[in-house]
Image (cartoon, rainbow, N blue to C red; front, side, top):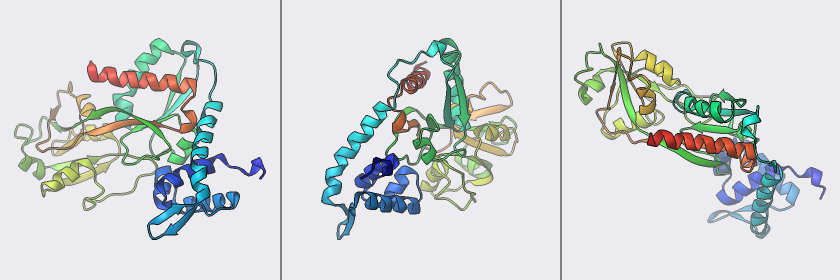
Length: 314
């Protein structure tokens, strides 16, 4: 077999396929469409001249060759990560590297300012390029075109490395002139008009309607468990825009607490605890396995993790 016929990406896909033993789940884990995953499996079968996964009464099962290949593939991917990583230490003080970070405006407004404070002290020449979750796909992140993704994720490709930065709760923003601001009960919350805001995962978002209760996320799922439903007037994917809407005296905005507290000094707004329980969520940072051993990448990851931890403690 000629080495020029080997696509390293196919080995990444094979690794996930053998772990998931299901084309649909593997596609989801990698952020690919099912047809693209099926095409990758076909190419793998042709390249290796083996069916790799066969259908049985217990589902898709790996062939004997596939089982033998699995630890070898994992070793190859690990060695490749190390081989493509620079052997020298990262000189932060003299670096002018650009780090591309994909995050929502929640992460951009709560975490990134503190990261910039540290960069000004430790790496004044480093530049951050902030992208939105709709700018690129998981596949492009996997290829190393984006250094980091920081967001709330429903799912992440299993091939990615990840770490939790912090947990956050929810708070409500509303105008001091809102008639319910001093009587913020569940009954009044449900009578009010609401701004829905969220953007998780990657890729372009889909349109929503108030009837899409299964797609509305944490706040509405928590309400649904009590048998209640709020009246949504506006859907937006921008937390800061949602906060601006809170100035309208008939609207209530329920957003992550860290985003809400950014407006606590605004005399025109009040920050209130929701009148019902909403489970907290996790802000995660994820990156491609291709960047795991990169010296500069390890440095920026450690800085962001330290910033997140220091924010929690002080």
